[in-house]
Length: 245
Ligand SMILES: [Zn+2]
Image (tube, rainbow, N blue to C red; front, top):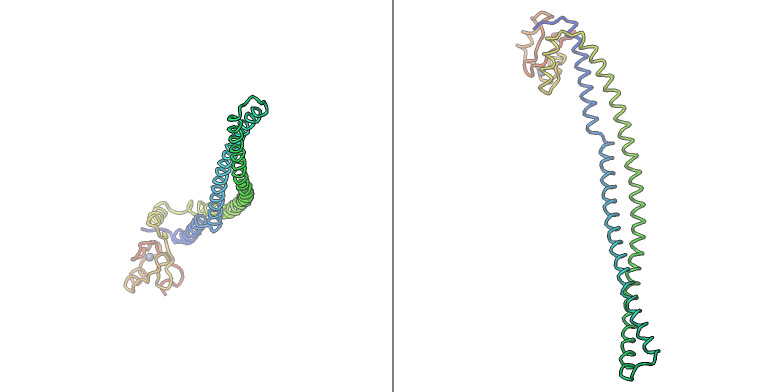
């Protein structure tokens, strides 16, 4: 393949630009700011899950407290009924003894229920404090997530601006390059490595492998408009002053 020397020279800047675009893409995909955001977002999620668990436990305790309340209310009702029967005086001595006995049992039952209810209420109070503390943690982490996201976005904006600038310059350069030469460059790049490399100190700038003397001698004899390819990686080899010194 043949191409004007100046066209081949354009590939030097194009190669540098593509390397820069590649570095920017790699950086955008491997941001420390993204890792920081992921970490704090995971922490926030974990704290929110814990908060939800506490809320469920609180609902359970609320249910228990309500259950005690209704049990205590029904015991009191029976006590009231027994007392009014006692006060009515319309009971014989056997009924009197039974009622007094039942009333004592009900009073003990009420006291025991009230003790149990108090215990649950104390546990609920403790859990409410835990819930408030956990809510503060969740709120703080939510703010941290927002800050981390803003920091990540700021870096992405900077990287994208540099990328757009490089892409703009790339478009300018490629406009002037011969279609066949550019296609050869792009085909080589599609393999994953650089499309072209400078021939420097007998090394290919694309694969960094040293080119043997026989190939160097053969290439040095070729006309300047002959497009050179690296014998190792097939990248377009770009001559520069002193390449064959
Ligand atoms: Zn090479």
